Length: 488
Image (tube, rainbow, N blue to C red; front, side, top):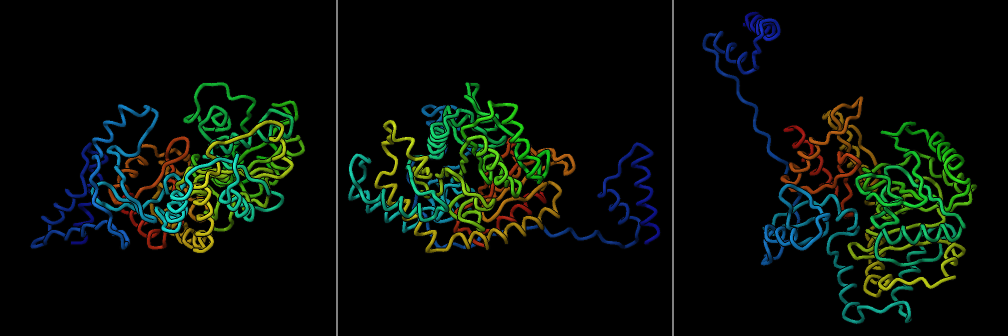
């Protein structure tokens, strides 16, 4: 039987190549079976079951609101057409608890994107909810024209987390506002106009921060105003790989050839968020900061996504590069979902705003300040930075194992719970797997997993969950990715 089987396989292969006929494996198997007297058909491989989500003790409330279809129809009528949504059939999310979300039917999802890297402590964390509710009952809003304890108490707690002489806080409502204010400070303090930013960066959606952003998908055709974009020190796709010296040299050359030689400032995310969880080449910021400061500029760290211990190894992303910026911007995780942002800088730089009236109606209002302070306390009490380091290390190891199994995974990168998985159709050419990413994106949703997408081509899964995300959650995510990729 062995010899006849081999002969048949060889004839099948030969016929498929030379005779213009292609034998499918099933046909070869059928002929093998019929050629052996009394042989039975081989057993089919057992059907693989999808992975099961870890148990969680929470029962969502019955939902009695509008259906998803009704909301979508009204949304199309009353909201701007630029407001996009995920998935072919968008989800109607009605409740959240810690690292999980629930749709209108009570179906539970593992949130691996944290409201676009905004939910740090967990959805509806009781400590934060209670603090916000109690303050709302007492005093919902006043401004900085009156004295109020929450804003000062929060500022003091925030400054205690900062290195060096970063001692003064301005509160705003978002990351975009924070970066706008930081750019204004840099220009006023330096007396120069030119700003340096990185390609592949995202710093906001206002007219000013669109200029700082280095992704064409987010930029409207308007004047971006004295802003220069230098090469992105991307270890995976960058021209110089992980060579920080070469990238920093390009910054120097750009200043020398593309500006007057004097600049206002340099802004960078240490871990690019929207750009696809790209961690800058090791040592790059120290070299770039030195070059920029010699040209009269100040250095701004955008910590809107990477701050507050998310990277695990450090509290702030810039600390992974062993630098101290002149200005730090933050938002998203600072409020666990509250509209809150901040700019922290030195007393000398902060003082430049005193020459005129600088005012923000809602910045640091009592409710947001109390909520922000509660976030800092929860992160400390629950040791979330160490937790991110532990779970993140486990998750990265498992993702790298998955990379060995599936050729579509070109790169696994990041730290802690600030991770990216880049999908490619060709590892050598690094061709973005756009269509495949879209298919897997839907498949993961059907498996009760919500991830983000990033990168210029939308081919990077952004894994940035609430920081209460567990090892069991990490295993479920990787098992689900394996299941989805195996059936691609």
